[in-house]
Structures are given as structure tokens and as C-alpha cells.
Image 1: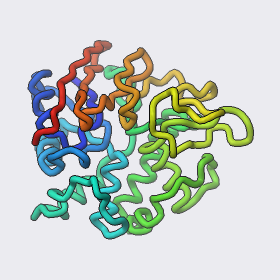
Image 2: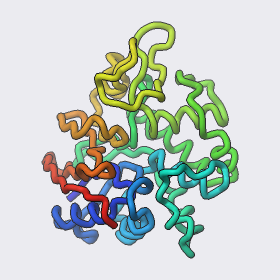
Image 3: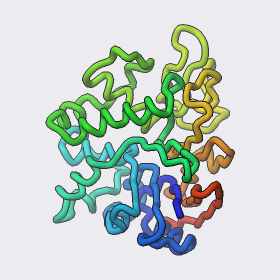
Length: 278
């Protein structure tokens, strides 16, 4: 059985209880975690140890908090006051954990038997098809694992460029791809800046800036017709429609950790309450 799981963010206790609830067996099942494995919750290292221990049965995407951990670990950014991944940085296996995170994908698409779901942490900008999303995510994943890694980290932060162009190159290209896949919530609709990412607004749907819509409601979205599952946007809560799954249900804020079974045409939602205990 194949399960998609929203943002864990170091809430290892909740993840263990969720796996027990679904009867997860790494010899039989697969778990797809939609990024933000670490940070803000109490047990980032234990979460990585648990997921890594499942081997190929747990496929984990990178989220913005995971990338932030990499940037802090490599001295590119200082830690924030609320960061809780010090246990990873202090681990004797620190280097191995950082290498493991660098090898995680930013997007992937499941097969037909799993509904063909496109998996991302945050979203997909309007101009990208599902195939283009996976290809562009692969570009960044390659950069994370080769000699351009330091250049990538130093150029990762910033909200520009806000509009996609195929001619983007180097750090601006990697930054846009990263922002789209790990930070997007709203984008502009219509006008000269159609599709431009708004990366400042973090609240729910009612907080959309003038002239903006949630990325998944853009009328010209090229990925329309492909089912998409994402996390990142805790204020949305659970969205469970035939073509869209929003799975960040605020576990780290004391709400829920959510798993959805998606194989064989079956849809089953399982949730556990999170008390943020290790």
C-alpha cells in the first residue's frame, strides 16, 4: 500500500503513532513524505533516523525547512531562534545525514497504479506541466549533489525572479525552481506579471493579495488534469478532492499529522493528533 504523508517537522512521536495506525510495514508498504522532515518540532534527528531506517520504503521530498538545515549546516545562514534541528547538527553522523538530505528529490510523479500523483512540497507554478516540474526538480537535485552545491546554497535565498522564464540560468534559475517547489502559495493572475510568485503571504485563502489566487486555482495552470499532492500550507488544513491533496494539517502546531492511501484507485485518510512530544 502507498501512503502520502504531510509535513512531519520533527514530530517523531506523531509519525510513529500514524504509522502504527495505518499498520505500516516497510516490507509491504511505501511511504511518501512531502518535505519538511525536520525543524520546529522536538525530534528532528529521531525523525530522520526513523525514515532512513525504512530504506527504499520511505521516499522523502525536500521542503524549505530541510534546505534551511543544509544552509545552516554549511555556514551559509545563521540558525533562527525557533530552529530545532540542533540534534542533527550535533550528531556524530552529522555528515551522513546532510549527505542523505542532499540526495532527496524536490518532486516526483507516481505511476498509474498509484493514481499518477505529482508530489511536491509547496506547489507548481502555472506555466509548468507535470513532466516539466519533475524535470526542473531534477535539475536542482543534480546541483545539490555536485560541485555547484556551495554556489546553490549561497544563491538560494531571495524572492526574485518572481516570473518563470526558460532563459533563466545559474542561481536565478535554481532559486526560482526552489521557491516554486518549496515556498509557493499564491501567484498573480492576469496582466504582465501573470503567474508571478507571491512569497510573502503565508496565511489562508482569504489572505490572497489583490490580483492573486492560490497557485492551484490559476485558470491557465498547465498541470491542470494531473492530480497533485503537496504540504507546506498549514493554514489550508486538509484538502481532499479528486485532483488535489493538501496534507500539511499543522502537526507541529499541535493539530494533526495526516496520511492518505492512494494506490489501486483507493483513497483512505488517516490522521493522528500531535502533542509535540518527542
